[in-house]
Length: 75
Image (cartoon, rainbow, N blue to C red; front, side, top):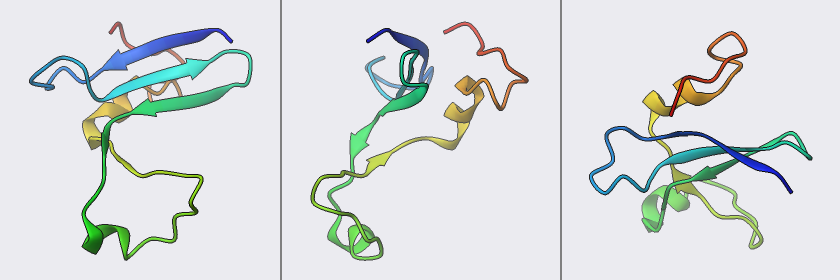
């Protein structure tokens, strides 16, 4: 598996989250973010036991190549 970090949240107070990765072998994005544990928010979703929900800031879309015409900005 060849993961490439595409970008970290420049607004993260600890510099650790949120982060966008791309798995080159499967062509799948992996997203790192804070786990959503709020029962009210989760009750509005249909999340299977084998999945989780994370918070992911809207401004982080800049790191998806599809949004930036094929080129992820420097992280």
